[in-house]
Length: 139
Image 1 (cartoon, rainbow, N blue to C red):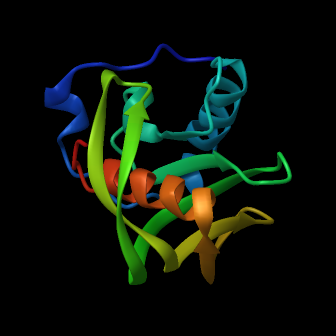
Image 2 (image 1 turned 180 degrees about the horizontal axis):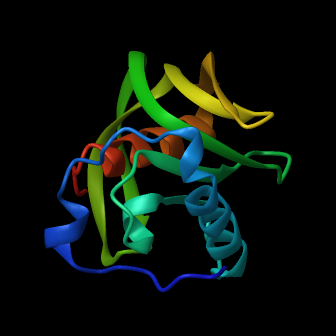
């Protein structure tokens, strides 16, 4: 289901609770809302009013990925990035890393499975933005 985007800082600044496999409907709403949003590449659950640590993003090959409970383990190559957010109109400068190692969970056959992955480039930047959302950090 396509959900309305949240712009309320009081909601967006709350750290998200750990997600479980039972939150699959929220993940599907994220995917649907992301697909419907114009020029959107990533979306976190708190941006649709759900304070669960779930995010969806589109990779360089236009595939959609959903990650549960993402955590950044390592960041290399710090730089300042200009970012925009679907929940805020202004462009801001924020410190990002060119390469990140992230732990997260993925829903496989109805169960969350632990994963670790390295991301680079724009995908790394999006994943960091989503982790910030899950932690209640606004850019």
